[in-house]
Length: 348
Image (spheres, helix red, strand yellow):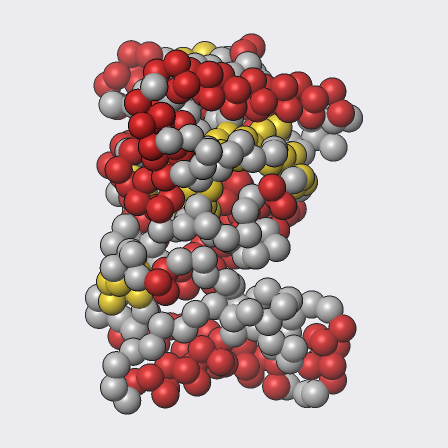
């Protein structure tokens, strides 16, 4: 299998891209290949892109269905074209390893049933994420396994009016695990360091960070929905240097998918893990115990906190860092409490 073409991240074509399935018809930028391949590639893109007769839902889909077998033939042709590009290497990744085509057509399709049918995620306030330019989404973190980050990524991908893509900052452990490392890179995740985050933000990307880290995701069930420390405010400093807004995000439902009632610390040290969870079902039921509980989720994006009014040197002001970090944390915590009061049940 040929290697993908790597494009410089600051290339204009990597900024503020639109997905081809937007109802306003703004197609994703097709990055032309040199030479005679361009014409064939364009035809394949047209075959693969959803359109009024490609089997999409809605009134146009009914027209397409009435046109005979053209719908499934186009989908088949698009699928074969996609496979050919993967085999021949005629696709592109950015220098962080992000593969937009694979994410849109495969990874999101695999996560979507979990998002829509299993956790039945309800999204609020997605319009608070800017339609263009960079922004930093700061969220609570919970659930023993980091499914909340993936569900937040689907929420932005599927519900934002401008079709934005969320680039998550992940812990070192993610990039040390075989298979997980490669999939995370392909999905647009990158190491949680200030330098990478700032480059992404300056390039106009939406970046997601969960400052609680392992303290949040591995906390006992008895401390659910109580935010842990947000560190030293490094995410605020990054947003200030890039001059982008901070969008607080609150996620309810993830805390209960794996109720962590204990932590086998000795086993965690042996395995090199930050914690080894003990839940009512894991490890007692074996692989079956790893199945998350089907809780009902709500993801709410809050009002953005602007940072462009501050001078560049403000990023070095520790008092400002503390105040803004506390403001973001309090807004997330307040929203969590409000959502908890509003929900009828953990599962419905």
